[in-house]
Image (cartoon, rainbow, N blue to C red):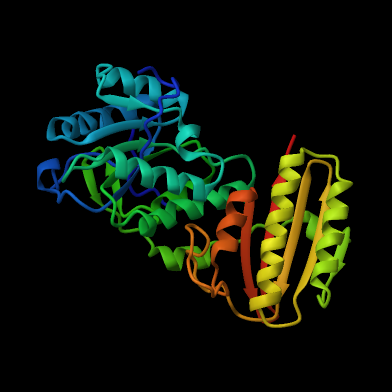
Length: 346
């Protein structure tokens, strides 16, 4: 049994408790619980082999926090939640949350849930400690959403009283284990908690994170307009096409709204020509919206609501699109900027 620190592959559990928190951290080192300042987030990673590894590292840390006046939350997968719950002695002060109620299905809603929990449940001058475990999904596009999330929250949660220990099974694919070390400023090993030498600045990490290929983009689109001059007419054409798709009405309506937001941004704020291509397949929709400018250069754009009238750098429209679609990928090249939206259902 080993707790990996710098691996270079880079209530009852599940009871649906309402209380929620951010991601988590753990361990003992030169920074013990009493020496840490009370405000500001911390974000640590633990790569584990067995559920007992998680319990051994995280239970003492959670109990320490409770004695200091911190809140304590477990939001991990079912395989790790049970042993950790037992290791804290089923202490009723430890809140066990079914992880999908906390992380939600899409990253902006997870960020919002964490922020609200911290604001509502952290005692004055104290922290919310959470042991968290992301479900990365089944596809490279799913992985990318949550890899980006793990980096974004270093910025999004910076002022919040959150201390997170994110736990990662060593059985995860190598790209996910690599990203775990690149997105967490601290690591927890058998020797305790330490600064992570593999941590990458979030802006640099997000800009370098590859966008996986989408096979449908290599096929003929169901609808295409590479030089939009009649925006209203194109909008009606997209709606008419989606009306013919056999899929859940709410999913189709969400996708239509996201396409409309991104197309409107490209036409209003991008450099012409702006274009839209739409692909459909059984159980799947993909759209790419492009303009000829070099906008959307903020890697954190769309992970929280933006205010103001200038949406050219990623405003309310991109934030909505991230909530309405399974995957949102922004690409920039010599030809301009594109936003690829995709959604699936079974």
